[in-house]
Amino acid sequence: MVLHLSIHNAQRRFRLDAAAFKRLARALAGMAQARLPGEPPWREVAIHLLDDAGIAPINLAIMAHQGATDVITQRYEAIPGEPEGLVGELFVNVERAVCAAPRRAGWSADRELALYLAHGFDHLTGADDHAPRERARMRRREMGWLKRLSLTPLFQSDKL
Image (cartoon, rainbow, N blue to C red; front, side):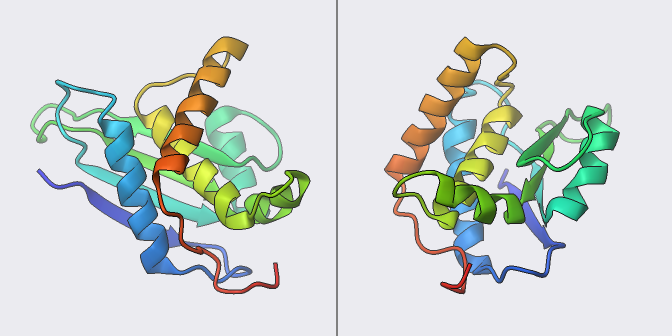
């Protein structure tokens, strides 16, 4: 079974290279799913690209947290009668990536957005970051994934 990956760009402030983003998402999905040997292949992942205003109500509805966040992950198991395999959604805040990137030395908005995507896929595997040790383990894994990739520019403007 081949993963069906859909990307819904609901933010309009930042122009993204859709093909580069989809290639990155497929690569990260493959690395994340490789953590789950023996599990059925993932069926479908929908990625929603949002801004602060777009993610805030989702953060409140799903996480019961006020305000914007970087990424929210939803994982749905197959219901009886459906083919096996994970169905997931990632709600990724593009605006947050652009605003947060300058705070990290030598870091770009492209890399920050890629990190959010990696983090979302890591959560789809069942990884949890509530405790400091698990959060550190996730970050090491996600940074390892990013190091293995040849990250191409995701943003189509150098004026961020």
